[in-house]
View 1 (tube, rainbow, N blue to C red):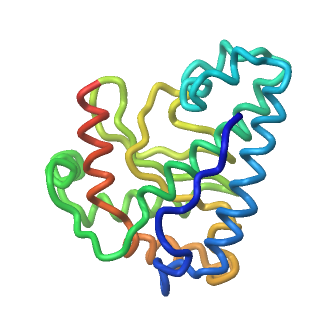
View 2: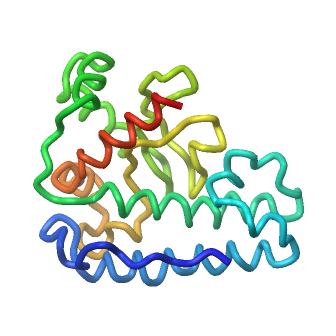
Amino acid sequence: MFELKPLQYAYNSLEPFIDELTMKIHHDKHHQTYTDKLNDALKEFPDLQKKKAEDLLKEINKVPEKIRQAVINHGGGFVNHNFFWEILKKDINISGEIEKAITKKFTSFEYFKEQFSNSALTLFGSGWAWLVVDSKGNLEIMQTKNQESPLSQEKTPILGIDVWEHSYYLLYKNNRAEYVKNFFNVINWDKVNNNYKKAVKK
């Protein structure tokens, strides 16, 4: 059985950029639903229940077709949100190896910020924008629809922004651009840096 982990910080700790009520609903309701529905999808498959959710997504084509889409949807929602909560924190400046890698790949942090934001803003409907490491150790910005995971495309996410409306609508209404702009105030670059170092060592 997969379980929803409690947040490691207060619901209001990201204010004013992400509000307390949104965090409560996003974590306690939406993430809980993905968790419950993933468990429900795997009820008849005890061997799959023993696997890490990340491994199910990495080997999605090995998941029985009967439940494959449910695992993509709810397993993705479970894993994506576990990842998302960990890369959120205020007042952490970018530094370390990830800063060097971003500058090398995108020529400047500002240009990376522009490209990442554009990816988040141009995604039609619900989904995510990601900074990932590909199988060759290169940085790449990508989008995924709904709760699809980069892991299913042999990419390792190191930063991601949830652009489902439930992640911002209470505070920002239909202004996704303002949410994306303010997201850069709550990125835990220390965690992103650690994610990057682990990804390139694989």
